[in-house]
Image (cartoon, rainbow, N blue to C red; front, side, top):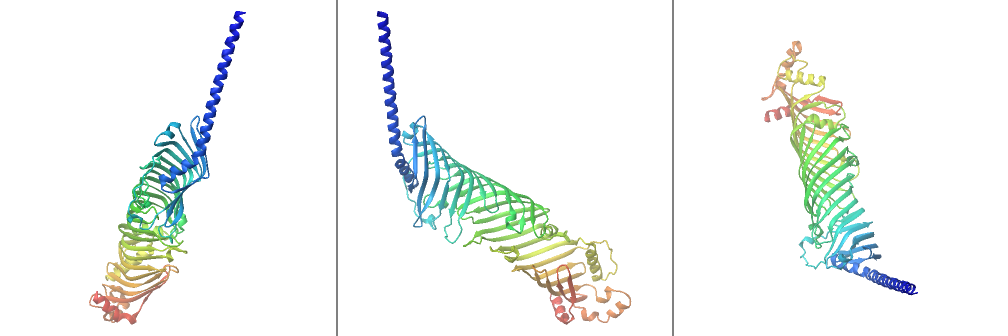
Length: 524
């Protein structure tokens, strides 16, 4: 009986302990539930106040839920950080949904620390105020909170232009990852974004911030980028797949960029000839409106090198950008240019030097109707591909020097020098000089780019006299008229016109201008 009593007593004690621990557990669970309920009740106001103080903005929050165990998990919807810009309120940051994780200890410390934040439907809208850089800086106390990593998929960055008449810049980011976000210092970023024009993917990585609340354009940014599979055919007049890589540093409103591009299948559609176009460049980009200053662009294709400087500036309205360029080369080849510009094989070979100022205005229609250009060009030692043209040039040169026999296979170098102005589809040529040994022609006129018609007039000057360019009875007869065509500086002066089309030019001697032509020849 004693043993049975002892067993009953032990079971009673054990039962009492179980009940006690159950009550303790229930008490603790109740306490946790009460704390969790209190935290959830206070979380929305706490989150709203903390974000509002950090961003110096109003904060709107649809819903928020906090789970304390086993780790702190925060989820929410409808987060909007509102800022004032030019008297209007704009959604600076908006997230359809968000989640965050941390520990209870991190939430209780002075610096609230979040491990990971995920956001979906994230839209960041940046407004740059005109003249904001001149406003005095306002010192604000920023609350301390850190985010180890913030990740958003399919995010959108919108940069509003300071001029309301200009277009906003919109960047669609497939993925955005920010490290050390939320603190007052710089944050590290990785972004995969979609470029609008030309369409393609850009991978960028670097540092951003701290955010300048007085002038967003003064916010620091740096990094490296790689631009892949950019389709140039959206520009209609050209095509090819461009890739580029480089580095950048500066402020959002003034980013210095250095890099390279490679387009192995670059084509101008007028010529439809693929060439490998490579460039190195340095530029300054205003990240708030897309305006670009090209300091030095060096392009290499075939055996030619071309240097470019200029600007690409957005204009008010929906049309696009004004492209203003200074293009020049002392190391180019005319055949490389012709391969791009015309479909038949290049008719001419030779060294080319040129300098031109070029402007393309935005608008509808082909580029040739929206481009203006002014400059000068010179072709040295030019030779012609077609045997028929080459033979005629050789024949002209020999006859102009009084030599009646020419080698049919001889390549006589020609020299061209011109000044030009292109506007509204018409190429005006104030001066065109053509030289071969023994002959020189000076012309002026115009060429219509649309219908390819020619309208030139000028003077041809030959070393030999007319009678020296032929033999027999014809030479004898021409001796009588030699004095009429001879001038102080040339054996023969011929006033000529060139009309017709580029494919079928018409040459004519205008005797009524002979006196004027001789004066021109002697003046030169």
